[in-house]
Length: 340
Ligand code: DAH
Image (cartoon, rainbow, N blue to C red; front, side, top):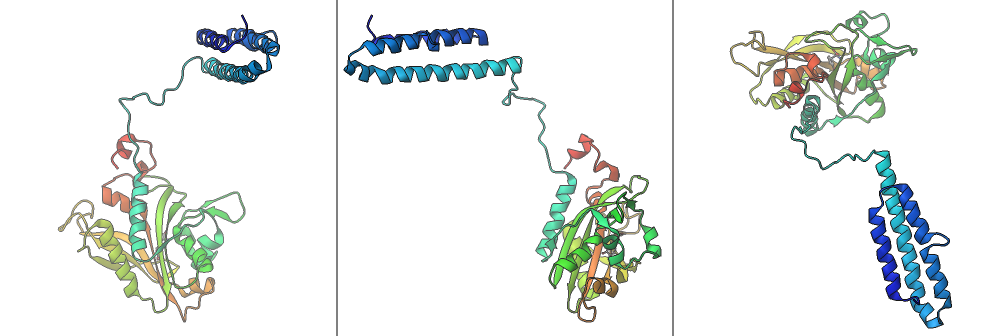
């Protein structure tokens, strides 16, 4: 039979049929040699092509080339398929498989609370910033008017590290000096982040928890600005437009005067277990930035003044969602996590 289009098609057809039956790499190799080997069918056809008159050659040459290309591609594809099967032992991970017990993920309660807090402070014109968790003595203490021999250093149980002068920050007030150094005045920042305390854990204490630090510095900032900001923040956070605040004196070395801010209990009018039947809940530490703190970062306290507010984000979340154990936040209890 002289070489013609029909024969080429037939060979292609035979090849395809043989290929579908192949289940091993060895059988595939046999087919490859049969068709594409040096003495294979394609070579044979090529030899026949050489005998043909020029016109036929022109016609069938490209058809043969195409056939050779097509067989090569199909053999390569089959080879990959068989190799993969060998590797995975024939079992594939089916990403479309339906799992009746499938559960949707949800945001962690910390993420939710952080988003709410960020929205509130951004809406009041504050910039959300962050600072390092691995800190130096300077930013954690010195720059905050807590010198080496100051008794206030005992207030915080610090995780000191085996790196000279390095510690895990014990509060987010560390961000104050970083921002005063880096940013231009006026300054309005909200810095949420993790802090670390070397202390025993119980339902209300953890060795790691999130805090938020708020700082505003400008000309003529007074305690009135501080109280208005604190009140607006708490009213928005607890969703209660009539939430009231009251202040008590508090001591924090980096503010003067220092105050503690209580909010009227968002959960009752006459006293409940959350407010311990007092109708007030302790919520924030705050004060006017101490002149030494401003001076330390090169800000003239004669010209500028400011306020700072600090609070435990976990504590606010516990109050808002009625969570009774701080350790639940970073537990792996699905029954807790699924509620948010
Ligand atoms: N840094 C304090 C703490 O960890 C919280 C705090 C109190 C921050 C008063 C402030 C403040 O900015 O004015 O307990």
